[in-house]
Image 1: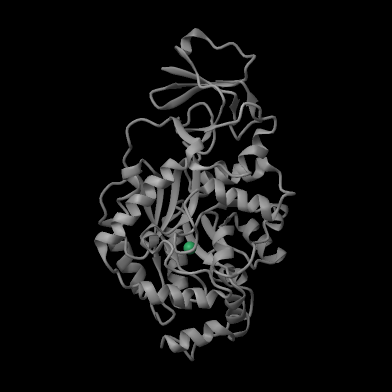
Image 2: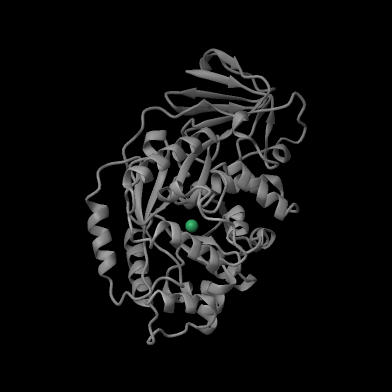
Length: 413
Ligand SMILES: [Zn+2]
């Protein structure tokens, strides 16, 4: 049993406390309070951590650990389809597994960096499932999303094979679920099958990239634009593909893939009507503003996300489209795009709302009695008046440490 006192405690589910304290026993939070509250002797010895802010571990709700080996290898682009072609040029097609040892080594380095940046939970997209065991090594929890794609797929066979592979996996600190890649890369038949699998797996979360680029919008609304040309050159275009004729978000809504546990990743092109569909469905918009800039789709409408009332989480996306996996930098990028959004809401997205999106808010996302004591300490200058404003301005890794980590790693389930 121990009791930590700090210059600031930022519980997320209640206002920040100057000079607050958090009591911990066996990896769980057993008490929390402001400076003026008496710290009962039952909470054990008090450790004063000084000029630090204590906050819950962060939630990186969208990344692709298996692409970590591509760090710095895919240059920034002006147009999304140019970035995709550059990715294919170095990676091969998503179905190519590549050099397994190199992929696993880079994924391990990345999960250790995530942990060093204060991350508790991760939502990891994987085509190969080749690195699904690696986040546990760094003490991360969350989900691996087995991502399916294929514009030419005519049935649900991929989903059946995925289910067999997922069910054969051993216990892990990460659950394993399913994802559809995106409306422009997955046939209607396969989208329908993933939507059915998502209902079967509920309440496990599922993931899909949507409304990322203007080129995706042109294909789904009109059947035109650079994506069509690229699909034709790849030899997967289908003349019997029916143009949805609506926005990509409305298309997924029609398919039934917008469910309460859906992570709708990017939504950079989403209209207010799209955001209302997502809000009504109970889905979460996972925004990755640094990746959006890298791949040439512009800044996401962060202000409209929050104004719509939809739940918002953050992801770094993969190291093929971002400099690092520091989620504090993602929050800072969002703050720069939409300075009118209260810092408290951005911090909630990076913690509690991300944990809710991953279905793990009973144990993570806030400093609340009963939850896991996975507590980040951010070192502060000696005078900080606006702690939330300070935290959304960006925090470098050297200012992040773990004040407490939860106990023994539990098995999945
Ligand atoms: Zn992604």
